[in-house]
Amino acid sequence: MTDNNKGYTNRRYFIRSSALFAVAVTMPSFLSCKDGDDNKLEGEGCKTTEDILGPFYIPNAPFREDITPEGSAGVPLVISGKVLTNCDVPLKDAIVEIWNANDGGDYDSSDEYLFRGRYKTLEDGIYRFKSIIPGRYLNGNTYRPSHIHFKITAPGHLDLVSQIYFKDDPYIASDPWASAAKARERILMVGEDANGIDMVNFDIQLSKS
Ligand SMILES: [Fe+2]
Image 1: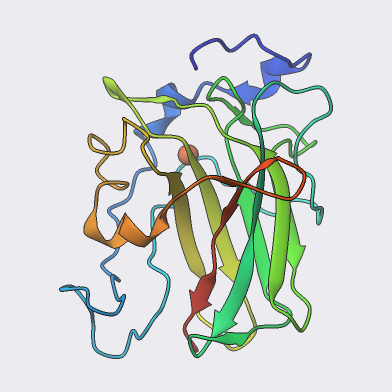
Image 2: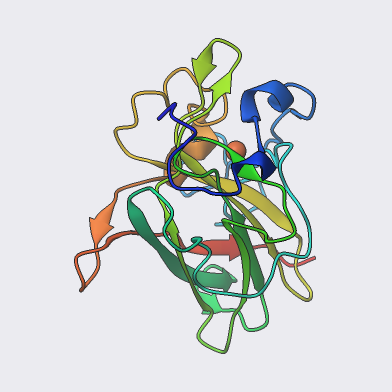
C-alpha cells in the first residue's frame, strides 16, 4: 500500500497525498438521517450522508465509465448503484462524479484525469464505474482507510459530497470521518459481479433543493 512506483509511467503527476491533506480538511457536516438513526434530522428523510470533499477534487473530469488507466496496478473494482429522489424514485440527469487514489495511495493531478470520471444517469438512475480498490495514504501518523470520493449533482436537488469505505478495513476505526456514525451506511461489503470482478453497490439518495 505504500509502494508508489507500481504501474505508472507518469507518476510525477501524482500528488503526494499525505503532504497536502492537512491544508484542505473541513469539518464534516451533520447530516445523518437513516431510519432508526439516533442522529436523524427532521426533514432529512433517507438522504445519503455527506463526507469531506478533501483536497484532491478537480472539476470537469471526463464522462466515462472506466476511470482506470491502462496497465495500472491494483485490484479492479466495479462501483455501481442508483441515484434516487424521494427515497426510491430513480433520478434522471444526475451527474455522479468519483475520484480515487491509485494503488499506491496517490491522486493524479494531470490533465488526463486518471482515476477520475463522471457519469450522467438515464431514466433508471443507474450509474456505473470501473476503477480499483484505492491505496491508503497517510493522514498525520495514521492511514486513511481505502475510500472513493463522490460528488453528485442533479437538477432541482442539493449537491452531495460523500465517500465510500470498505468493510473490515482496519483503518476505519482510527479515521475520524469513516468512523463517524453517519458513515455507517457508507462502509460497503465488497462482492463479486457476474464476471468475478470485485464490486460494491452504493445507492445515492438526494434531497430536493
Ligand atoms: Fe481521499
